[in-house]
Amino acid sequence: MKRWCVGLFCAIVLAVVGGCRRSPTAPTDSGAPARVVRVAPAKLLTGELGRLSPHLDLTATGCLRLDAPDEDLFFGFEPELWEMGKPRTLGSSKSRVRGPSEVSFSIREAHDSKGGRVYRLVTAVATPSGQGASHSYTAAVPEVSDMGQMSRAVDLAEPRELAEGEVVPVWAFVVRTDGRMDGEPLEEAVKKARWALVVKARWERPENR
Image (cartoon, rainbow, N blue to C red):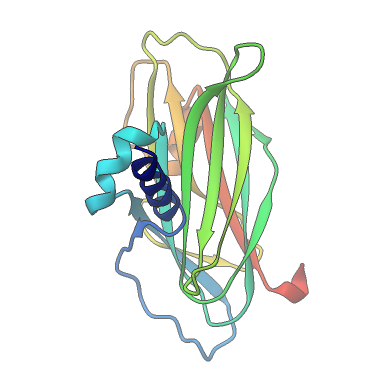
């Protein structure tokens, strides 16, 4: 039993740090200075890893493929909690990347010491060298009735190119209480949500930190 649990734990780590199913992306010219970093939606926990999904007790997951050049860059996250169309920052983090990399997100529902509902957001980066980094954030979300509540994860609709310093929403978990859950693109879905956890991304060169 102990050996099985250790194996399950290792599989979870591999899934969250570097477990994205890659989407086709255009090659990056490794000899040119970085002008943009291309981000493309991908899937987490696919194939054999999909069998672990019921055991992880995750509310939502997401994944992105980064096409970055072969030079050191800092890729950062700026998560926000949106309530009725108004954002509140949850912090920020940066990780060093070099070359094509993958980032993943997961949300797990929990409760604070007073019994209030909170969500734990984890962001992770995996590089081709096998190195990785993760950061976690805790958000106390608005208390709303479960009756009529609908939720979903929202990915980027298509690949997008980010210029240095540009801050762009790349993934979100949205909750609505109006009985509707349309298929709007990410930014529109966030604005219409009762509340939402939004992950924004940016990158910069080390010398510009």
